[in-house]
Length: 123
Picture 1 (cartoon, rainbow, N blue to C red):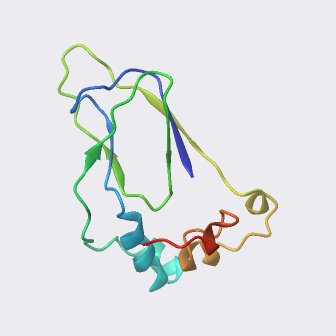
Picture 2: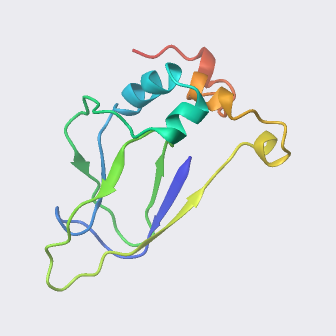
């Protein structure tokens, strides 16, 4: 999981907001299922049918949590007075830190690091 801590307000669109493509992590996950981890690292990501982008409005101190497969970017900042600032952290399953976690498992199921979520029925 990526955790983004927002240091400034970005409440208007095009103010340097984090921008996501809701649900597109599933298209990325499907791509990962057809490639080995080495293939993914050696090739560029193909064109994927992404959903419409959504700029996340935030206040200073807000935290955004995103799955690592979620396509994301920053919107342009067209504000003449506001600087967009945030800091990011990666959160990992404790097994990965101990070295017993297999990278391959991240490409076969995007929910492997999240106990219990493999059993949850999703649309």
